Length: 150
Image (cartoon, rainbow, N blue to C red; front, top):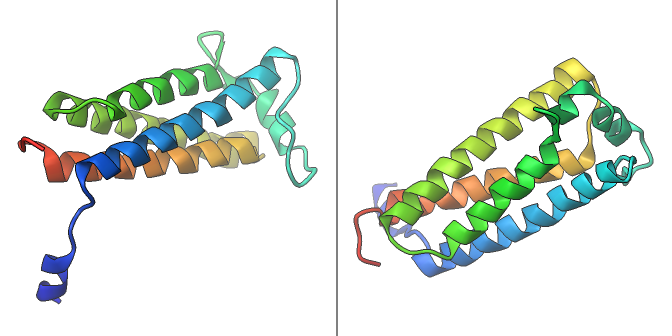
């Protein structure tokens, strides 16, 4: 078992950066779709024809400080995209910290969907999954490459 663990290697930092950038760009797309739907006075279209997205969009939890939470998602993903293109420990630590905040916020919003709103928005779940993956990538990047010249 120990020998197998020693053989596992983290991907190259450049690979992690590209994966993080791709995830962040994908997240921007999802969050932008949610925000544009809300700005048009609609809810994102549920793929399965349910009304979960409408219920979530119309809930009081869909806005924070008067701003649709998807706008915060766009901003967070945009910063993660920029950080993914940067090198050095500051970029690695910033990516980890922002990923942690985004992941935590996604967990909170998912909790609200399940236990307060009693509806699931497929687009919100997709964004939460993307944020979880981006957080995992940035965690790997930080743990493996902080303190290195790579």
